[in-house]
View 1 (cartoon, rainbow, N blue to C red):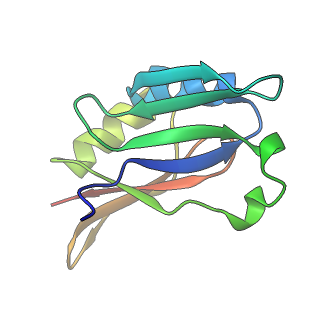
View 2 (cartoon, rainbow, N blue to C red):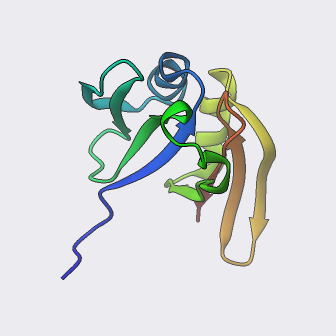
Amino acid sequence: MIERIATVGIYVDDQEVALRFWVDQVGFDLRRRESMGRVGEWLEVAPPGAGSRLVIYPRAMMPDWAERKPSVVFECADCQAAYVRLRDAGVEFSSEPQSMAWGTFAIFCDPDGNEFGLRGP
């Protein structure tokens, strides 16, 4: 029986730039860092206390990375407050918080152009 989502891979050009974005700007914790040889590292980041993690994976190891675009939505108790905190930390948004029938939703981008959703009540 499947119990939870363990990891979701995102594909980046520069792992250190991506790591700094997720840790310094978004506020995630670095959960795992291990060498994968010359091409890069296995890097896992996650919101504090969360079980599921993002793997910051080097594009150089995945020739088909462009076809593997992530669709990740992060849930938060207050979407507007999360938006303000992230925006003030320098995170770029392609969509400010919008009130939808199912809640509030915003979209932000990482330095590699990957988009991520924020969802709140």
